[in-house]
Image (cartoon, rainbow, N blue to C red):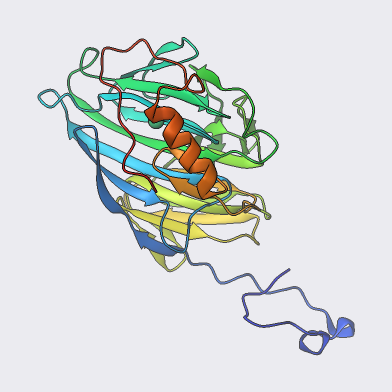
Length: 312
Ligand code: MN
């Protein structure tokens, strides 16, 4: 087991004839404050990407939207816009949205359901709320970077109305993507990933995790203790690879998303709604969106198309 030391570990540090079990890794999360941003008419707390921590596994973007009363504002009406090289993962806690995309998909999503869109070489979508729903909106919008093997492939869309549930000690999980505590989602994953919503009761819970995964905690409500660290809504907690159990505790119960995966091996370049590898790819996608190139197709939406920002 890797120990939490810096610098090379030599055989003199642990002579083989005197092997004793490794002590448990000291447990703490690195805790980062989210940045506020505006998406549509609502305020979001952006947990990823951030300087120094652009990805967690292949998860490369995480916005905690709301909770916000949206009856008057139009809420999360987001007109047609393009994506490349990523999956969008939409998870609602409160509210409802209609997803439309250039594949012809039209899908209402409610809390507890999963929308997973694959951009591949290009897709366009819109999120419409105002004609569907009045009340409180809360959710998490996530992106997953696609690996080289699939990122130039076809776009796709999946809706999962039912997701597998798992029991935790002193809590429960809904598995969006990947596997956790014996439950496995059928949602597409192009790299080894997990995404789950955890509901923790008061007290401690031990969550079984993969030792080769790094993890992020995005807290929706309550406060979660990870060893010495406390993670609250508006923060991201990061736990590196190297342990097969994640002990969490909560004084009054909590709800959070656990996101994890094998550290993404490729450096990615993110700009606007694009995940790429080079500035040239981004510039080309930007121009193709601006000129209405057929790469991105069209969406049957009454909302206005969103123009790209000025060139990178
Ligand atoms: Mn989008």
